[in-house]
Image 1 (cartoon, rainbow, N blue to C red):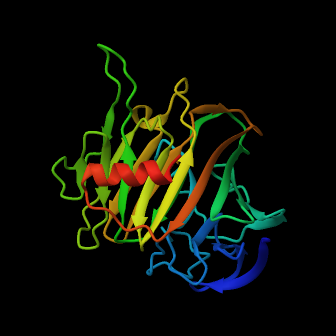
Image 2: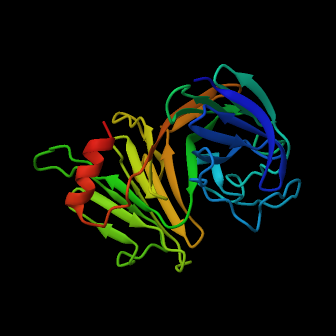
Image 3: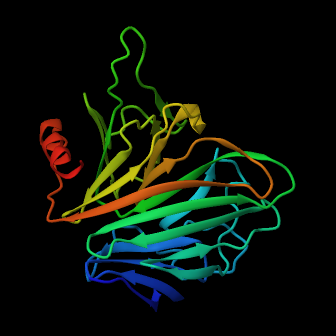
Length: 300
């Protein structure tokens, strides 16, 4: 097989770039971004959620959560983190993919790039995220990769399992609005199981040291797996969380983070994710034994 690249219109945006290998396709916007607005099997549903209220909009001086996949930098702060991505970007075609390049804004002075490489023969994608400091002074930050997943799914995150003897081996990070008894979250022995509910708007978010370097989302009779590197010697934001996830009524976010760095002027930091998509995978119940069998089969 080969990778084909063409321009299309998608969700109201013109000049989107579609990258396809005959099995899956990726659609990235160029009128806003950098942002991947679709990923899925060809002719099938979008694994990402697109916010219907924001679809097709551009050029406004307000921040919009369009959905899809985006690059931020942590720790989160208003208004710095919410620098606008409502304007046209540059792009370059690469072998088996594309690079999306945001013009540096005049206030935060961080330039974002997302490089997408699609496997020619498999439903696998490598996504390289890069942030360059275009300002005049050093900034401490963590590259933050956020996938806004479609409604109705079930996410699985494995807990750290290192034997540390008499010392603790994990920490759970919670936000002020996260209620421990929320019906969408299930605190298992091995896994944390997180359900998206279209009828519950109240947000919930948690973070964890994801030492195993993956998170899985069952939806649409498919399985989406996000792989990334956890560096046990690095420092991460938000009480040292290398992975975070958030949900509300219209989506569930899967968020991996890179280590905190002091980024000097004109210096860059990068963070890589790899995505896999499996077909004909039934969404499991919240039974850990059932989930464990699926995880061991699909995640190597």
